[in-house]
Length: 320
Image (cartoon, rainbow, N blue to C red):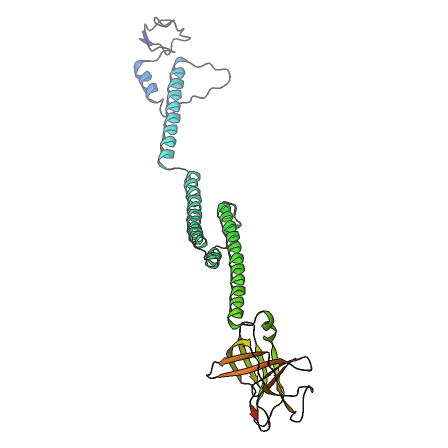
């Protein structure tokens, strides 16, 4: 019995061609028995790739070996591909892992910026309420708590615009308040002057006077009367007296000094004068005093209390 190496069919021992596939048996010994064929088939797994030399053509047995080798190689390739595909799904590459980290960092920065923006919005709202209520300085202090470096950032441009607008409103409001305060001060001064009487023809008596002649123990230096009636007396020992004065027209005959000399060394001669006004001073420490004013021959304003002292006059004052 002879088996075809090409298809494995059984043939007569002296057959020259395979009855099934027509394979030409080159020699009588070319056919192999069934046992040898089974051994060859089992050996395909251990040595799948035959080595050809020269122009040798593959035999039927070699073709079977090549087919099994190809199938085995294909199985190995497919298995390897499935393995790597599965392992990639289970274990992501490191590059993929870095992406969420970067995204998380950006989200944290955005969250911080949003938190800062909310804080500055709250400050602006508080400052706006202060501005509306006329508390301009307090509003400006509130706005100053926002760092200038933050306002320069592009993402805070809307906050910067709000700060600039409120700052302008506060500055305008402060200037308006100053104007009102100045006008109020002028009104109060005018009212005080009217109340005290140092207006019109009496306005010139709101002046500064020097003590004309000092007798023993007297320390008076200067006397200043303001338009609102305020009085300040300065003394050589550094003390001061304060009071409030009113003025009115006067007449009669009052004792005073001759005031021809600027700074008399000796007691001047006394004389009687006709006063134009009477200035009454109410001192803060208590008590009051009346000074009679007139225009002296030296064209200076003079005040005298009209009281005699040691053959002279108690107090006489001359304007600069």
